[in-house]
Image (cartoon, one colour):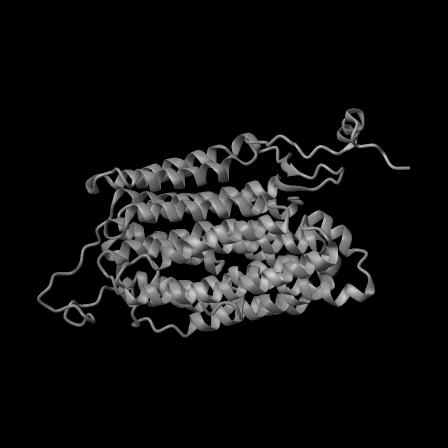
Length: 521
């Protein structure tokens, strides 16, 4: 029997029975990334009307916007808000402000805030309006990603965080090294993104959905004929996020990119860029692909072992007299730290997603101390632009507080007292591997921790050696007086904030380690 749709009554009945696609938006839930994105547009427009001598106001406006975005996380602390949900009855949303999202958003916004502090003086030789716009745009994407709960939003957030970063790396006009670094970063990232999108298309073809929770449900019952396609999609999707985490063998862009980028941007990529990659990797593995843990679990475990080994061995080989060896060592150290961060994700495949808290705890520790190390490097670079590790010799004699602070950060990265938070974070990651019966991975991690002690302690010892005689200092004529380190209020504030956070966390490590004991989702 065919209904007569020409009558008004039939049309009314059809409209009443059709599911509504109209929904309200929880603006408070999406406020942190939204405010950051709006601030980026405002800074770009304001740059057109501000005279050159007042461009510094754009930097202070950026700091204000990032502080406001951080404040907007406070009303969301319950972690129970979602928006952009399906209206078909399925409990699936595209944006969820749960505890995992809030912790990562706080981390990336704090990282962007400290990067802005480090950048206030460096933008005098850079196009200020473009610089602050790109930094805020990238931070908006980074804040969006951990709350994304479908693959489309994840990919968009990842690219919003990454594309401005390419421009920031190459923003030093006329600098061949900066342009080369940006090109390498861009080309390798584009290839990784293309591979990831191919994987996403395979997953969508297999499941018919992009929502992470719906994908998990559909992958539990994949027809045998589609099993290979689904497994291939899972692996290819992980490739893009492995690139963002600088996991070996996708790490090759890191050293040249960090060396060629402005120092604050190198710090930003080492913390915020890495956090974005790990957030996406956690979401797709633990939330979307738990039924394929037998595929991604061993792969992530091998990546973890390979990454920490490659990073530490390369850092060990750095020549202290080589130009920019300090930044290059921090770059390879960043690769090695990525290996440690991957360990709990691999453990989650064998022992449940509660192990993910160990990655979050370690990421919080790493973010604080690595940003602090880059801040001290920025201070030294003011008078020693070559930024060799040898340039730090005798730093204690000229800037004792800076030397003590950098020594503390390096000991935290090494996991030695008084860097208690670094020690506890490493023990937590090590325990995650042992509890998941990944004994071989725990052994590899232990060996790598010992290898890393050498170059961290070597740099720390250099800080407290006697300063070299100016007549024998490489590149310093005997007629020139010794350099005095010039600081500034923003740079000093950044160093002080990271040092204070590191000391606080070392005195009360439970503030971070409690994340390792709870399920964040």
